[in-house]
Length: 164
Image (tube, rainbow, N blue to C red; front, top):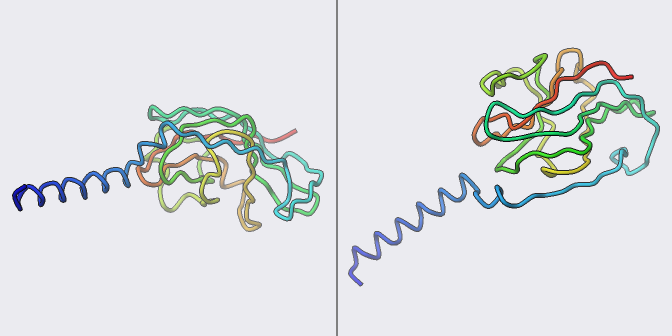
């Protein structure tokens, strides 16, 4: 092969690897299921009181979401955001955000100054827990968003209502 052909093949390979890294298309077909019990970070199961509860609904894109989001207060005072029977699409760089809005209608409403990240999503299916820092005001942060940080897209959200 000519020298120019190798250059073109090399450039094409680098571009394809870059596109794969950005979009991670395999995540559209691979589900990660998590089945955690309601526990403290140390693994001890404790009694809890439900502070808020809501159902997930799909975001403003073609991504779907369903299940229940509940905020529990454990006997030790810690607050846990729990997803049950949760299901959404998988994607690259998906995070859990608490958003200072009563609800999310469009992805563009989630801006850098009105959310708190609880970290990377553990799985796109199943029951899972996320600890809420003690300094988070739940009267202000009323909605949970399943947020694709790479593409600034809300996959699904749930707006909290007073628990039982």
